[in-house]
Length: 230
Image (cartoon, rainbow, N blue to C red; front, side, top):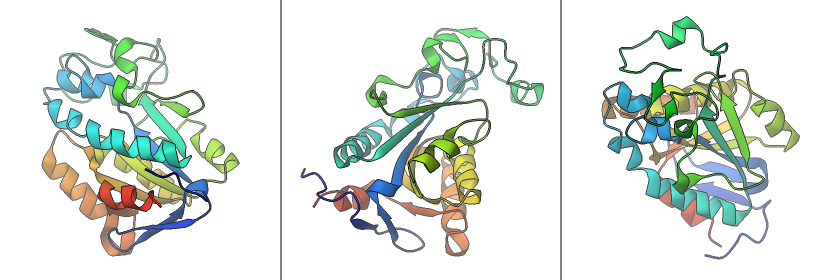
């Protein structure tokens, strides 16, 4: 694959509800919560009774996009849902929801569930951050709530965001809505995001590009990969 010769070149991706146009220099790839606690057995996702293999199935597609984006010289952002060890940033309204076998902060096979620094809280090896890439630990579902993400993106003159990660209807959708409210144009890569509930993913994708893209754009990763090759 040939690297992009000009990071300021306008690229176009065939998307819904219409083409998504962007410049690599003003765009960040945002990878939401591809961490062991959600992707691998023994984590929080499995403790809720979910089939984590549904989420791990998107890893190869995410790897392809990440490799191409790095090759293009684009900004990469990784997020982790992560709480302080004393759970001071995890209110009961969050910790007490659902009926998991292990709640946030409980000790599991990969350490304390969704606690910063624990083995299960780390991003999976296949998508591990490189030195210089942005890593955001977020106490909420959205990537912008109680984090420095917006400030850091502004400092880098980022106006467009390309999203992938999990889960589609929770942390990914929340982050896209937060981004939209802050003035970013966002594209969701549909084969690089997943839910434990396929019907929830389908509904979220439809909601995202409905009404002329009220939340953002959606597209498969293939058109993006093609656009990144010159």
